[in-house]
Length: 132
Image 1 (cartoon, rainbow, N blue to C red):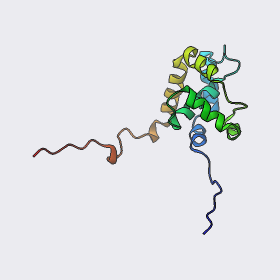
Image 2 (image 1 turned 135 degrees about the vertical axis):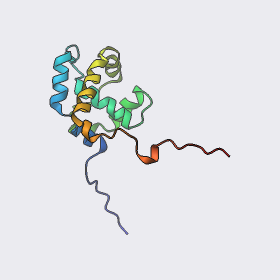
Image 3 (image 1 turned 120 degrees about the vertical axis):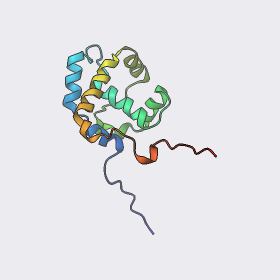
Image 4 (image 1 turned 45 degrees about the vertical axis):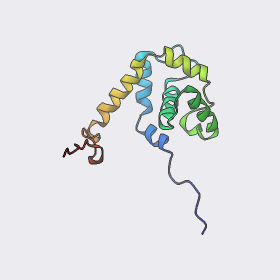
């Protein structure tokens, strides 16, 4: 039996980035002047790179950059014209203020608060051990 190997749908990272409006990233970038000293790495590309590393279970910046490099042709739809160098990402991680990412998180939380559950699903709830 031949199985259809064509990919249907969008990758997980693209689906997650759809819920982060570009206007939000732009507004936060302007508010905190996050792109002021970064000519080669915009806030959006920095955010996407870090999210890629998280969702790919990368243990460090080297793994993240190598993973992005391996997917370079497939990342055009995410806004990458080329993969950022490890040194550029490292400098951005060291120098870009974390408050920028905190502000993005808080704005997303305000926007999607009604959709987010405040309690874990049943399968994740702590179960007491019965003692004999």
